[in-house]
Amino acid sequence: MKPTNSLERVLAVLEVFSEERLEWMPEELMQELGYSRPTLYRYLKTLKDAGFLMSTRNSGVTLGPKIVEMDYLARRSDVLVLHGLPYLKELTGAYSCTAMLLRWYGNKILCVASESSTKNPVSSYPRGRPMPLGRGAIARSIMAFLPRPRLLPLIERNLDDLRSVGLGDSTQDVLKSLKKVRKAGFSVAYGEVTPGAVGIAAPILDDRRYPIASICVTIAGNLVTGAEIDEISARVGRVALQIAAEQTSTRRNIGE
Amino acid sequence: MKPTNSLERVLAVLEVFSEERLEWMPEELMQELGYSRPTLYRYLKTLKDAGFLMSTRNSGVTLGPKIVEMDYLARRSDVLVLHGLPYLKELTGAYSCTAMLLRWYGNKILCVASESSTKNPVSSYPRGRPMPLGRGAIARSIMAFLPRPRLLPLIERNLDDLRSVGLGDSTQDVLKSLKKVRKAGFSVAYGEVTPGAVGIAAPILDDRRYPIASICVTIAGNLVTGAEIDEISARVGRVALQIAAEQTSTRRNIGE
DNA sequence: AGGATAATCTCAATATAAGAGATTTTGCAT
DNA sequence: ATGCAAAATCTCTTATATTGAGATTATCCT
Image 1 (spheres, rainbow over the protein chains, first blue to last red):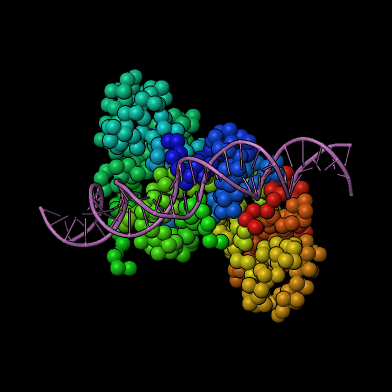
Image 2: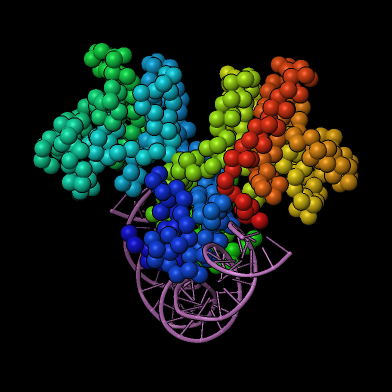
């Protein structure tokens, strides 16, 4: 995805920030993005004036306060979060666990809401943190419902991980495993992302049965029996359906 | 600030989202921003592809998942948050209260971190929520340290609010009240923002004594005596100085 | 299936981004 | 304070990308 117009080139500046690289110097950005000095500084000025970036002491730049403000608004406008939160609370009320809501966007799985009822959660992905694609119940719950052409390249790219968690050796085997998940409607993983943690996830599908998100309960493995996992799985699956139902019914009356 | 180039015009699309208006229809955006149909749709496509916006099922747009992801990164790169959080925990550990860290940017006071040690906090501004400028200990703690030319228009614009909380009837009176705050180094407010809540705030100044942020403790009024408020005030003031000392960062002010 | 609404495309006119290099401003040490 | 080096901005021309009216296609909803 190389930028083709100036709009995308400005936005590309924001794309370079990552967990590994939270601060950039102008020189580095020129290098990384291939922009000339005046151009880069023009972009930076625009982004800083809008609050998307701010300068640091050592003349570097980091993400700015406008982002913070917009995330607050995003929390309030995301129907998935709004509808889902009560269910997360319900689940954390029922079990000593962490319950999360994760969106499937681009090629990422992104946590958008997270609730915990345990002091030291075995695994707590906070809002905004992307999840790995190749391992864990969440990834599988989503992949299982992706259309083949979308799915295949993902499997190829993550085959090593998928193999290591026992999904199968070949693409075909993985597809077979995913078919089972599809049939069950949920997915369970034992310590794939965090050692000792059991993850139970169910996809949230839109009216075309395309996965838009996943709901997941993470619980310490030594706290639950197999029967309990079955019980929780069924419950998570039910909740996923309920959230999905509420999503598709969000219609608006025309004519305001 | 009317957009002068295409970069600012794209970003202006993101500016229209507010707590009152979380979702926009393309038609409305054309109207509001004055862009032609193809242009608006081009912008929307760019912003959606980058994840800054997403479409809703009624063909409207809302803020998208990229925002969520970037806020996660922003939390990890903001030295104010990183240095400040332990102090917030210290304060919520010592008192049954809410402790917050708020940035001064543009003409806004924006909460960037918030911790509570009480079940039902009397007032809990979450991260990302802007604070009113005319009332409350926080606003005053910052205004007291603004240079005159920057301060005067702010006072004029919020004179009604400032008057109603007893800061003075004229601009001159308000200036006098703020001078006292400046001398004390902190500010206390009784139920100005939330009825029954006492707010105690101290500014975080950069090396030029320009306010970049404020730290605030909010506590239920019926929980504290006057003496305790004095104690907390001194403590909040000390913490503000400590955080300021640790700031190796933001020297420049953003969004002038 | 059909009508209405939403989104995209075409293409000419024109405004406007980009960059090399000079210049100014700022940061920092003495 | 003073001066030096690094950082940021400016100038100005060229060429290119952006724009919008209107037509066209895709999508939604009954």
